[in-house]
Length: 131
Image (cartoon, rainbow, N blue to C red):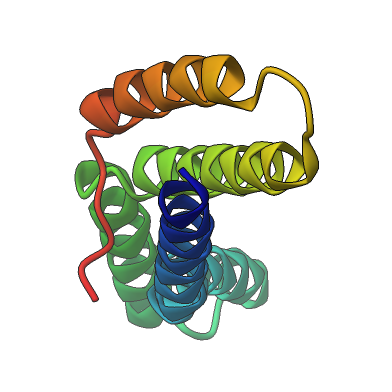
């Protein structure tokens, strides 16, 4: 029983680290797609005011819209939100297993209940990190 608890703690920590690492990796394309799209739209709008760069403003708006559109088409926000949620749930499970490790009374019964929660959670995970 102690071995199961230790394995689950280790597994939950590992999964949390995987999702957190993946979210850190996704920050770069997120900044490029959202930040780049917003910046190009802003610069294109500012260039319209000056009336000196008529062609460039259209290209900036086109590229900025394309970057923002790619972000939406790939479902980046939804994917990142699910990854954050799954990471938080793995962390919560890890804390529950750590608390169970210190438990003295009815440990076996609580482990069965926690294993049921774990199985239900893992079977519902529909987003995985790519690393």
